[in-house]
Every structure is written in C-alpha cells, then in structure tokens.
Image (cartoon, rainbow, N blue to C red; front, side, top):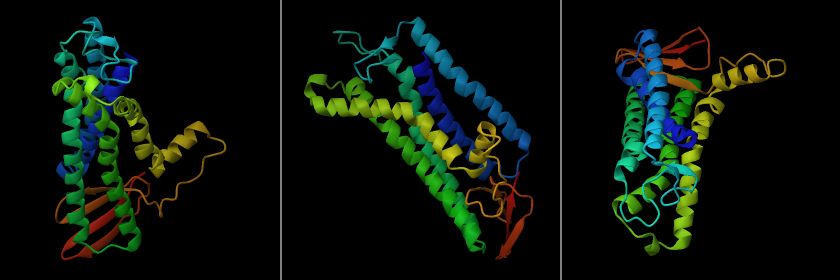
Amino acid sequence: VVAVTSSNSSVFWTVAVAVYLHFKIVTHAGADDRLFKYLMYFFYIFNYGLPILLSIWLLRTERLGFAPYDSSGWCSIIVKRGDEERIDNVAGIVGYDLWIYIAILIIPALYISVKVHAKRQYEAVSIDSRSKSQLQFVDHKFTAIPLIFLGLRIWSVIISVVLEYLHVDEQHIPALVGHIFIYLSGIGDSAQGAANGILFVVLTRKARQLLLDKCCPCCCKKPLDLENSDESLPVFSSPEQSVISSVSGSNSPHKYQSDGRTLILIQNN
C-alpha cells in the first residue's frame, strides 16, 4: 500500500509543481498570494488523498500485492494472476497508467509554456550579467525537470505498453532485455521523489539553507547570500511590467528599462 501510494503521489506532486509554476509565471502572475495558498491546500488534499483512495480500492478488490508480471516484483498492482491469459486493464489503467500518461503530456507542455513565456519577457529588456545568469539557471532547471521525469518513468511505461496493451508474450522478449527494463522501472519509479527533492531543495539555495538551519541549527546557520544567488523564479505580470521574483531573499528591487518595458528584479524573503 505504501509503495503504490508513494509512487502515485510522487507523480501527482511532479504535475502539481508544474501547474503551480505555470499559474505563478504565466496565467496568474501578480495574483494575490491567497490564491496560491489555496492552490497548495488543494494539492495537499488531492496529491495525498487520491493515491490513498486508489490504494485502498486496489487492496479491497485484491488487485494489490506481489506482482512479478510487469513490475519489479515487490508490492505492486496485479494485472495478471499466475497462468491466466486475461489481463486486468482496469487495475492497470485506473491504478497507475492513466495518471502517468496524463503527466507525460502535461509536464513537458507546461514547462515549455513557462520557458517560452519567460524567454519572451526577459529578451525584451536589458539586464546585467548577474541577473541574466540567474535567469539562465532557472531556464536550465525548467529544462531538466521534465527530462528527468521522462527518464525515470519511461521504463515502466514501455513495460506496461508492451505487455498489457500490445499483448507481447514474455517468452518472445530476451531475458536480459526484460531484466534490464524491470530493474530500470523499479529504480525510476522509486527515485522520482528523490529527484524532486534534489531539484527543488538541494539545488535551491533558500530551501537548502532553511533545511540546514532546521537540521543543524548550531553549526550550519549562516546568512543567505542574498545579492549573489544564482537561483531565481521568474514571475512576469504583464508585457508592460515584467517581474522576476527571486527565491533567494532581499527586499531591494532592481529596475531595468528597454523599449518602454520595465523589468523589476525583486528578491523576496
């Protein structure tokens, strides 16, 4: 139950981060902070509640347990029992496949939209090299997130498509190839949460420093380098005024003007 719930929840949270950034940067830039606060409440309820409900349903219908057919062999969704020929597509689709296919479509689309929107905005103004470096760092991170997601999850998708929907007999798949895909799917599905933690905590200076302050308050606490952080979250409010809200922290805005547009670099606490 814990394994399947965690796997589905990590997929939902990866989508939720993409939706949040798209709201924050593209569609609702400059909106009241209460909107994003309520959005986070919704994410917590949905991203933990739905995976738990799915796992309870799978457990009660005896579709959850040891499943070596198309998984890594530990607790997973049972889509085929023993020597039975019939494949339980309902369990596979509702329990996992539907959500991963939606995520594969939504996550790249949202991050591409964010990158295109941000690029149009900051290319229209003149900014100094440090601010440009901040924007490039964020741009690279927005590129890495969907690529890492696809790199981790694609193996289980390939296995489910080949075995469940194309109905390829396992005997027609070379044993070495099958074992490689099984191990890659096990590693990839289990590593999504760790990948999100690295991208959004370890590689984000403010989050990293706050974590160190909580874990080692005596030896690790030090003031953040507010002026030279290379990690910023671009938030653009309108074509006339582009706002880059940094995750690094400072209250002094820096303004840049070009072609009648104003770019304000604001570093929030």
